[in-house]
Image (cartoon, rainbow, N blue to C red; front, top):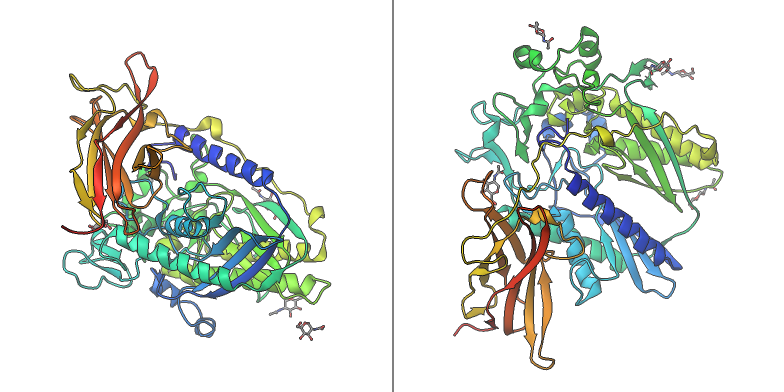
Length: 574
Ligand SMILES: *[C@@H]1O[C@H](CO)[C@@H](O)[C@H](O)[C@H]1NC(C)=O
Ligand SMILES: *[C@@H]1O[C@H](CO)[C@@H](O)[C@H](O)[C@H]1NC(C)=O
Ligand SMILES: *[C@@H]1O[C@H](CO)[C@@H](O)[C@H](O)[C@H]1NC(C)=O
Ligand SMILES: *[C@@H]1O[C@H](CO)[C@@H](O)[C@H](O)[C@H]1NC(C)=O
Ligand SMILES: *[C@@H]1O[C@H](CO)[C@@H](O)[C@H](O)[C@H]1NC(C)=O
């Protein structure tokens, strides 16, 4: 299901991610050294808002009263240093969606978390290029299911008025209700939300004093999430259901609206009646299990070419001394995450021989993906997150039961006797890819790949924008991992050599690629490179280079490069 809007699976993307992960593990492994871990946490305000507050409000008042806000504001940080105190890395969990860049963005971006990571690493690594220094800063997500970075909140884009709170619509239309901020456009918003996470994490890092000590252990078990029976606190039982997505899933969120006539908070069967026959009808049994969710897609019954959503889920807790990281294969809402952390903490502490106070952390979206998890009460409201809670109203209770089991076994030291659970299927050889490959590239008469066709001005001042363009090949001929599509270089008159100043990984550069002519059939394309000259730039002589690969009509791929003329960057306006 997740691959449908992308026109299927993209091997090149998958391979690049796998290669990057494997390389990271190899490098970490070959750099293993003795060191210390410290933990710190604090409250980071003004960096997230709840995007489904009407669902949150349905949680019991007594429970809501325990918390100051309808999102979690705690950032928890692990600081890793060598025995002699040299920085190694940091991991900072904070719940907020990576949707500062909205769904009109076509640039590859790490969003607010990527920005935070880049700034923190640059801060410690000094002058090294982005991603190349020894210090590593990670910004994993947590219980961000109902948490948006667009802190000005949603409004109607046509009238500027507030949206309808329950359905997130403007005059009945979900497409016009969009959340913005805190910046004036999505680039500025990404930078601000990323910057706040970076600065706060750096402060926690600098002030961390609580040492983490004790063993490193883990417990892992897969479960069939479509078939869990839960004993509830009042001794009645609940059951999870076969996977299904509700009608409000198609409405999207205020971070990325879906389609009219769908709206959030829909528990009626009106639209379901209209759309149900398109793919497959939900059975009576499924509807009653999933109640009050009007089922749009009975994904648990859709098995071609392989199941549309997973049923076998990996569950896991990683223990680092008194820190417990619960890896959860879904996006938990704020209150779901609070309940899960409480369950892990109390199950562990009750079953431990030691008098120990553990720090529970949720690492969201881990190991596989199975959409969202709301509380039973939030589920009744059927906002986007409730409609995307795929295993029914008791999904969270099934997680609580499972993670209590994991935590208690880990605490009692009996986790190695836990059965590993049903094996997870591997559907890699059943993937369908509908995105066409690169046919071939061509350059217009008299021009070569890499020729600069829009040259820079002779001179720029710091703070201004350089925009140049080149005849290019399709960037999909090579993702240029470990490398770059562009280089900003400064001439060093002492050595008579060009020094690399920025690559395509830098925030201040953008690499835009566009076909010329009718997109599907044209072989001619242009790469535009933007460099927003940062305040800390050394005045001097610069040039911008473009690196790429083109495919000729014999399907052979060749590397090319090109350069602009040199230009001057000066500090002051004349
Ligand atoms: C995305 O952000 C841009 C500003 O950067 C804004 O013009 C546009 O309306 C936004 N679109 C959506 C769908 O959020
Ligand atoms: C569901 O779980 C029960 C035990 O809780 C088991 O007897 C049954 O076979 C399971 N069904 C499926 C389809 O896995
Ligand atoms: C649930 O059952 C257990 C034992 O089976 C009992 O100790 C407990 O009091 C019961 N709880 C409720 C709310 O009835
Ligand atoms: C779903 O049910 C409707 C009747 O309610 C029927 O007309 C339609 O053919 C069914 N669709 C499928 C895919 O079975
Ligand atoms: C457990 O540890 C806490 C804090 O270290 C202490 O206040 C408490 O008395 C201890 N409890 C027992 C039963 O040892």
